[in-house]
Length: 491
Ligand SMILES: Cc1cc2nc3c(=O)[nH]c(=O)nc-3n(C[C@H](O)[C@H](O)[C@H](O)COP(=O)(O)OP(=O)(O)OC[C@H]3O[C@@H](n4cnc5c(N)ncnc54)[C@H](O)[C@@H]3O)c2cc1C
Figure 1 (cartoon, rainbow, N blue to C red):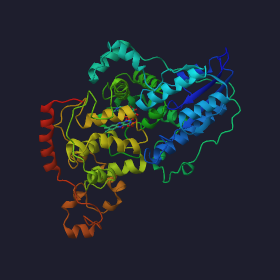
Figure 2: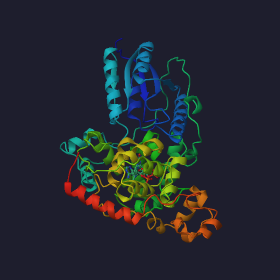
Figure 3: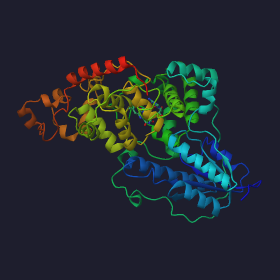
């Protein structure tokens, strides 16, 4: 098969599930007589032990929306199911594909897979185009501007970005697309067809698909004063309906919202507002955290592990599966921690400061379990689970990289007292504590037995006793952190 001046093109969607600001889509339609937009449901990823029902439901909803938007423009989405390389090869041979286009992806699984796709395309005589699109800048551009060594601090990264200048402006959404070739596929499956059960409660808070993403973004940027006043540390982690932050992270993960579009609209809102908050706490600042963590993740070996990870402090974590399970399932006996973990289990999301609390609790704060184990739980349950962002934030919270003030430990009792909404948040996600008096809600084990009876919540029966004593665990763990820092070993 040789490429022609007007080749049949296969546009392979993975992330970047949108038509607005899509460099891959623009590259694919350029001079294409026929365009096959394809998504492959990869059995290495679509597995109940790898992703929770919330994320899969979000993905399937996003694909349905993508298909609808493609059809509106004279095209359609073909969904294939199976190992990517055989599926791709079969499709490319059958459809006589002369050009393969996909958005560049820097995650290790994707890098290996995409190298195989390039090799396959080479064998079949097809051209490959793989523009960026997931981040504000191509990681290579930032790496080159940094002289090959990216700064690991936010301040340093901010200077680098300032040196490079504003990110490229978003691309327009094409109004018409080349016709899609005739294909018989099985369509977009349901959760049940894929062997998943359970209710995806999180979609009520973050509905899937590009249109919802743009609407959710518009709701924020159409209020310039709200954007201007946004200070991340001041947002309330106990606010859940609605959340205190944009809740756009799942759209950013799957690319149903473009980072560049979000950034451009935020900058416009800031200009309209006049005085406004600044990075790192502003909304633009949040996008720069994402940019920094993704860019560093693209060039750091073993970013999602401790061992062999050159930026990660080596810490002798314990391995206690019972403690990990109690944390994962929201039964540590600390209501603030358990409410957040139940929110994660039922809805696939929690606020950033709740993530701080539970991640600190699992690692250096209380349970002394490896951040890698916590990262894997988040990776399965979060709708927004993002390989680099997740790893980086876990390294941060466990004081393994990026953040080193390990003596600053979140108390699972004192911290939530800052938020008036903490009480209703806890009662909502832990209905077994609904009748516990306000005075004991954060420390229910301190109730007398008669108070427990009155509240219909016997500690040890209806709600667990604390798995550790926070004050004791914190002091012991501080000693262990001191020792790990004194040893000064990186991966
Ligand atoms: C232990 C831990 C694990 C995390 N894992 C993930 C993850 O897997 N995927 C993920 O998207 N975020 C992760 N975060 C970062 C952050 O908590 C979420 O991005 C944020 O809470 C999502 O809510 P939002 O969209 O309302 O955020 P907003 O405050 O509205 O921020 C807007 C966007 O900025 C980006 N962003 C915000 N905070 C961060 C941050 N700290 N690092 C990188 N990008 C950020 C996200 O794309 C987010 O949608 C993690 C944080 C911690 C502490």
